[in-house]
Amino acid sequence: MESAACASLFAVFLAASAPAARAAPDEAAGLSAQDLSREDADRAASALDNGDAAEAARLAQEAIARLPGNARAHNLLAGALNRQGAYSKAEAAAVRGISAVPAGHSSGLAPLYENLAFAQLHLGKAFEAGQNAGKAIEFSQDTSARAYALRAFSAESLEAQAAAKGARSEQARYAREKLSDIRRAAAMSPDEFGERAAAVDRGERIFVQESPGFADRFPALAALSGAPEAWAGLALLLLVCLGCAVTLWARREEPAPVALRAAAPLLARPADGLLAGRYELVRVIGKGGMGEVLEAKDASLRRTVAIKRMTAALEALGPQAKDYYLKEAKTLASLHHPAIVDIYEVLDLPDGMHLVFEFVAGKTVQQVLVEEKRLSLTRVKEILRPACEALEYAHARGIVHRDLKPSNIMLTNQGFVKVMDFGIARRNAEAVQAPGLPVAGPGILKTQTIIGTPAYMSPEAVQGVVSAGTDVFALGVCLYEMLTGELPFGMEGQAATGVYVAASRLVPGVAPEADALIAAALRPALEERIPTVREFLTRLQALPEARVGV
Image (cartoon, rainbow, N blue to C red; front, side, top):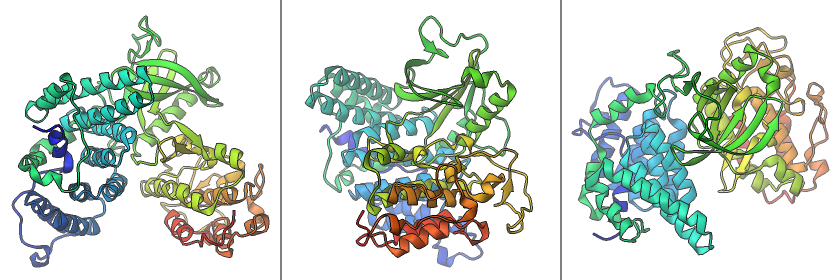
């Protein structure tokens, strides 16, 4: 068996098996969009089983058009593109699918992350592939042999990179991780991965990038679909997060559970030096008024995490501080998007509350601005597009960021954009009729707390009124600052006046269209402002770049 044979089995990751194809949607009467989308997905799966990846991709796209939240259809599309060797398109399709999965359907995320990892492996993005394979392991509730194998493939590539630069300790670490993961995959599925585990012992490679179409040589590919009952069973495991016995919240309306460890009998730092018996603290990487952030190693899943620890000052505030952290975790737990930093779990320990986050290495946009003063429109678009997509995803789930700014947008070392600090975002239930605003409804809400950074706050946000327009205003400030290196209303914020110097007057070459977009986003009156992040992004992407000589 050649060394890449097992890897080739990953070209398609289906969320469910394909039942016998039923009548075409056009022939069915009275079916809902959901039913028709399911029909198209069934036909796409059947086409994929029959080796027609192009037709599968077409049908999957039709299913998505009928029902954008159809996770299985998104996965079929990504799988079909992977099978054709269109890895960049498969990567993009998987990312879109992850963004589109409705809250409460976390089981549908695992195969999407597998497809994403597989595409990234073939694109040479080994680190990202490993991270996403790890997420597939989490969302499958530790039941996916394929996810472990994908992470092993990633570790093998990273091991080779470390060897090439003479980083022996790093090389040895990746070698250990590769061996552990492939053995875990083999234990879970001996037929698929037993030979690959043996290959590691023989010193052979277990993943080799292949040319497009290689997956068609392996008829066992169809077996990867699995029985619908097996995938449906994953939904039952959503009540458990990473093996913890107690879920953070039992409220049904919050569908994405996060583990809360009631660790009364545990010491915060036991004799083994592990926080909560699991996390090895490495160093402090940041401090602020709400706590300090530490880099740590997860001894169980062998990944780097960031842990936000409540400060003594906040602890002294009593129940309010704890409630703040619980709300932060509750908000973040419902958001799963490639451009939003993930929260893994909450630790309620004797020495205080700790939030365990995805570790993100890189620079904030604020740090980049300090170094470069201002950015070209091309770079601004590259940064704000995923940030806007993350905000749009959150808005669709009733969540507003409330403190978007360059220091909360991270550019990772791998080239990704991550929106951070959704911690002050919150779901709001009290609708109000605010002076000067349209009739209050689900999108315009009043909070009991006024939170944010003055320089980026809209006039209504200062009054505690929150809506999607709050984040649109902040995007306008970010766009202005990134293009000019200046804040339109200064550090203290004078947004209510609506008076600022046009960007084109500060930076020659900024197009009138850019000035117009900024003006539309910074309207003091909410009803006159750009209404949605989607419209802001559409107009941003349409700005003429050639005329901006930043």
